[in-house]
Image (cartoon, rainbow, N blue to C red; front, side):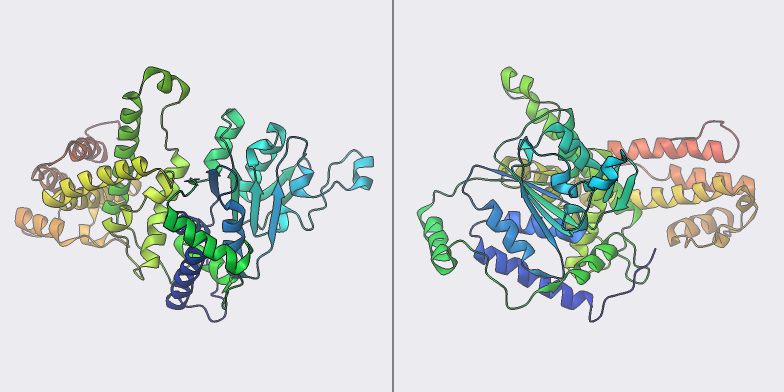
Length: 437
């Protein structure tokens, strides 16, 4: 699906305006720069944010000021309580339909018809209501019996004074990809800056001189998600692979860190887990980070900032651990030629996949693989080995085996990838019956 650009939109102007909006909010909400950046990244991706803190630290002001930076978006606000039912969020029930035994919500003015939402004290809501919210937050839809309709929701910010862990709330937490912990500021100078801002506006939202069109924000989100054909943010196969390696490495290190804690503390916590959904969304985030830098290609420096998604903003130890995971792998792959090896093996994997999906290609020159530009390395190897790249089936088998054999993996991950490719070569050329998974 492709989308038409809204009037006046250019990436350069939008990025400039978005950064100006972030700076405006940072000046208004003191000492919250990392959380503000995290929220704007969530807005850019069309994802949700959960903010945890004690009372009185300005969670509501932060959400209100962020939403005030955009024009043309409806905002739904509610403070959750245990007595509330789903109609608080989805709109009151149609009495006439209820008489017929059908549950139909009048969604006008509800969360369903709002682009932005703020739910205060979300864990005060009962499990029945939270369960009803799951589909709405994730699928952007109202699914209640016979009533099924799309929701306008772009981003919801929720706030809480505490975490309540249960089967339902654990699923809900996964819907809030971005999480932040805000602590009270005790530094005298920071308190002075907060007081200054309070004296200027008495704790109220300040209207910016310039707002960003919500349609611009929505369109930028489409670019990041790859839904705009002529504005693609390219992520090379090796960068996708490297991103997943960093995520996995961080997950392992977080669990190792948890195991080093006292037994009583470990017993209260489950293992740290990064869901496949979060891992997939991480690819959107790095594309968004590249977009904000004015680039159309993802670089390893973008992966360095995945802590906004994988860590709880406001907990320095989590961010430090992620940075260590990233730096360890980036140095290992950069200094030892690992990125080049990864690129070559993934390029070979693409060739093998083409052969497997269309066996007729085995009888054609490698250079004729439609829609795929073979990198110079494998063409050079073919010419060096056979005198040309137009090899027959048996020569192609030898070509791929020899090309792979000359790669001496510099990491354990690359060794595993090479083993997978060795099995794939056997399967593609009929000497093995099991493909790798």
